[in-house]
Image 1 (cartoon, rainbow, N blue to C red):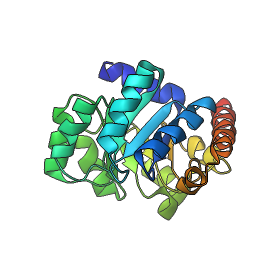
Image 2 (tube, rainbow, N blue to C red):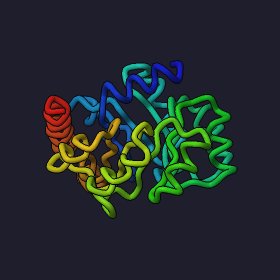
Image 3 (cartoon, rainbow, N blue to C red):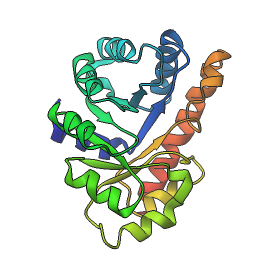
Length: 216
């Protein structure tokens, strides 16, 4: 998938499930439950056991049906590993120059984490296609609205603290998409085998995103 197509698909979906799975098998089942609920933007974090193997298996099973990325990159070598595993995009929680360079070098879509105005500009000028505002729970939509003043053209995706209840507030201030973790796919539900509940959360979240975007 070409980078332009990846970024267009991200905008189209508007929602990425940020998954910190408890094990390889349970993570695969979490993703299946999310897809059943209509969530096709999937980010497997490096805090998931055997993360690269999870991505390889998801790529084999679902291919272009999902928008598949690897997140929580903290080491430059992980960028090439993500590329080899079949990821469409890579995400870091922070800005670090060597890491950013390694992510951009993959040719994949890149999302580099930032919080302050300085970090937002550093991430974007270093090649981040979409800046990941993290942690979103710490600042909220009003903060992003303030950032829009000096940075009206930088695509931003908040992660952390995004829920089906507040997602409309985020889209109202111009996000390109949102990343949702435990509010969408709690690892505890997977450990308890409650995958139907993950599917229902996915349906509710997708519906909330669609309502939010229809009001813009």
